[in-house]
Length: 243
Image 1 (cartoon, rainbow, N blue to C red):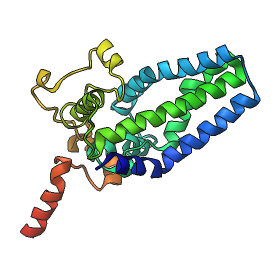
Image 2: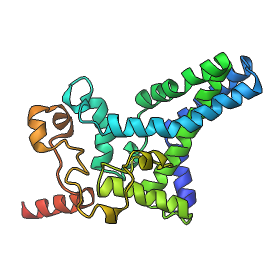
Image 3: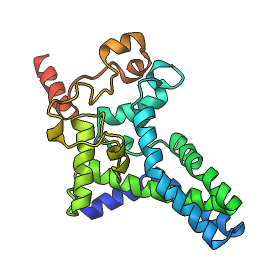
Image 4: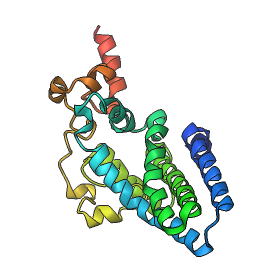
C-alpha cells in the first residue's frame, strides 16, 4: 500500500468524516462564544496533553479489562470496540472506533477541563482539539495496521510496538502515538524482553472455557475463534479440502 492509498482509505471512512464535521462545529461554537486567547490555548493544550493518559487508562482498564464480556448489557459493545479488533487486527471496517463510544468519550475527557478553564468557548475549543487529536491517532493506527511500511523512524517504532501488542503480548504497549504512560506504569516492552507469546493475545482472555460461563460474545460471534488471524483462511481452506 502506498501513502496515497492509505490517505484515501483513511478519509473515506465515515468516522473520520464525522470527527472533522464535529470539530468544525465545535470550532464555530468557540468563535461564537469566545473566551480569551490564552484560555482558549490552555483549553486546547490540556485536551491534547491529557489525551495520551486518557487513552492509556481506557485501553488498559476498559478495553482490556475482563469485565465487559461478563454482562449481556456490555458484551456487544466490548465485542465491537475491541474484541473483534484483536480477533482480526488488520480488518479495516473495525479498525476505527465506533462513534457511539468514541464521541461521548472524547467529550468526557475534554469538555469539562475546557469549560473549567474558559467556559463554553473553552469547552468547545477543547472538544475540537480532542476530535482532531483522535484523527491523528486514527491515522497512526491505520499506519500500524494496514500494509504500509513507514519510512519515518518514529512511525516505524510506533508500528513495531503496536504490532507486538496485537501479535505477541496484549498486556503491554497500550499507547498508539505516545508510550510515555506505558513507560511510567511499567507496561512498555520490546519483544525480546518477553520471549514467551501470550496465549490470549487474540482473544483477550475470552477463551472457550470462559465463554461457557459468559456466552454472549460467543453467541454473537458464532463461537470462539482460537487460531491465528493470518492462518484462518488457510485453516478454512484445509477444512473444505478435508470435507
